[in-house]
Image 1 (cartoon, rainbow, N blue to C red):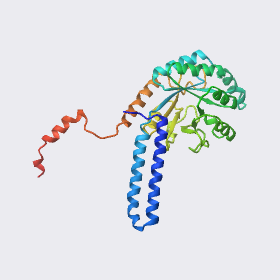
Image 2 (cartoon, rainbow, N blue to C red; image 1 turned 180 degrees about the horizontal axis):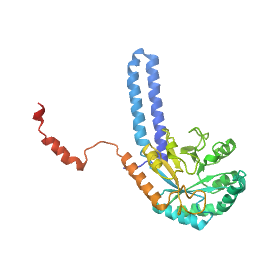
Image 3 (cartoon, rainbow, N blue to C red; image 1 turned 45 degrees about the vertical axis):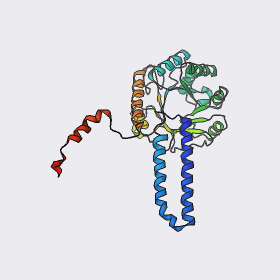
Length: 318
């Protein structure tokens, strides 16, 4: 079976929109030029719904879910630890490792404790480049959220085509406008601390990511959208919400990852350890397999049941 990547997914969506437009124009023509054409309107609307159903089933659920290990600042400022975490995430089945790039002096909001944490965990541009290169060497995807202008500029200078917009920046128009002017082609847009699923960036491919800006968060408060493509950044203590999101059509799952939940740092407690992350990946792939089943057929293990149906004495119903 062929899985659709994000490029193919977007192409499929464009094709569906074009198809729906042609159907809509045909309905308009029928209504405007011939009153008898109204008879065909229900039929056209029915066909329109079929296109939506098929497009959703093929172009939405069959997108391979990208599983992102959010290393974030759990490396505690150590490049060696960050590389060890990349290796561990790869062994767990993650597709992508995500990091955070920021300038502590520009990111801090006046909280002295936060400033000390950021100072300890911030990575230099050269270290970010080294981690990107190590991800590539290990066959892993690389993603980074940037919290300030110099950090955005670093990703641009690195030639990165994708950026994660953190929830703490999604309501800052100047930040969003600056990202929009950069040559990124793809944006992962976190919607934490927001009351909308819309993104002001219009000229790039955007994945809307449901997120609750609390550590840990209550997974029962998540709101899943039905407008693809979308994903989930889960800060809860478990991963049930991730499984539910995949079942509902999410194509992007991001979960905090740590080597030791008892390590020093603000995010370790709300992160999955390698054993937990591996189990989450296994369950996500199980759901993907279920969603890939397109047609109802008699399975080999059902043949004995079919045989019993044939032998069943139907004369008793006569």
